[in-house]
Amino acid sequence: MDIITDIASLSIGMKQDSLAQAVSISLVKKTLDSSKEDSQNLIKMMELSTNPNLGSNLDVKA
Image (cartoon, rainbow, N blue to C red; front, side, top):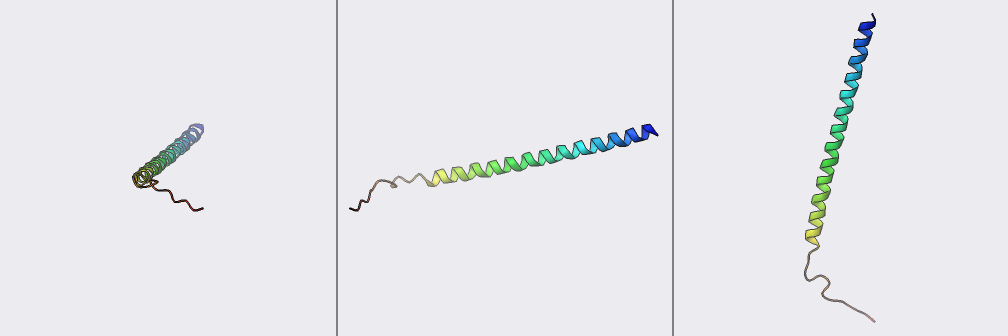
């Protein structure tokens, strides 16, 4: 009877480890996707900010 309990306990432990690993991998993939999106948005913002005429004139009211 003890060997059956040990096998069942080992099986449950292995399944829990497998689930934890799958969740960790999924979280890393989501983080990577988010980082890629943030990087692409930053590149777009930098490209839009390069306007050679911007800042060439200064309007002053007294």
